[in-house]
Structure formats: structure tokens, C-alpha cells
Image 1 (cartoon, one colour):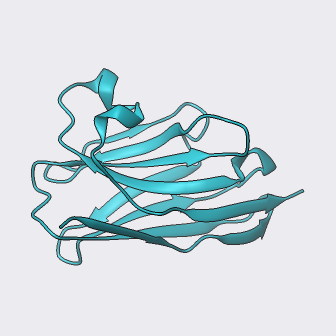
Image 2 (cartoon, one colour; image 1 turned 135 degrees about the vertical axis):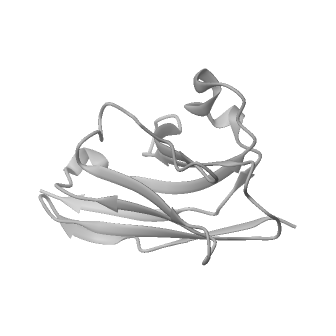
Length: 126
């Protein structure tokens, strides 16, 4: 059974950094795309970044491009999201997800991902 568990969230001041981790287990992820999404109160779950497990191709939402970096360690089976220059509007619950994404259009939407972690809270104070 696939299990995804996020960690690394917390409270940080604007301009600061955090690194989120997502420990993945339960299957081989070589054919999967791993994604990060976030959801703020009263808002829909939004795409943040994604990476293909095998090739390491990366994709980013415009709002985080240049500030966030997604990576993965295929030996540790762990996904990362390095977040720099954080802004108050980055505050949200961050979710790790895995799916056999077939197209770029689906990659940025939650429906492209079959497996989800429980989420970790990130709060950026001004």
C-alpha cells in the first residue's frame, strides 16, 4: 500500500526558508510523477511543483518559480520541496502526491494524482 508522509512544515518569517520532505513507500515509483500541492483556508487545492521520478523533469507554478525547488532522492524514496523567500501568501497546508500522470495538463491538477499524504502546515508571518 502506497504511503506518503510529509514533514518539515512550521512557522517562519517572511523572507525565510523551509524544506519540506515527503517519505514515499509501498511501491516502485519509477513510472510516477510526484507533486506538491497546497491549500489555504477557503481556497481550492493548488499546484505548486512536480517532478518525474525517473527522469527528474521539473514543473512549477508561476507563483513559486524562482523561489521553490523540487527534488527527489531515489535511494531514500523521498521527495523534497525547498522553499526560499517565503511570503505570507505561501501559507497553506502542503500536500505531497503521486500519480501516473500522462499529460502536462493533468500534471498541474489534483485529479492527476492517485495517492496523497496527510499534509503539513506552513505558516509565513509578515
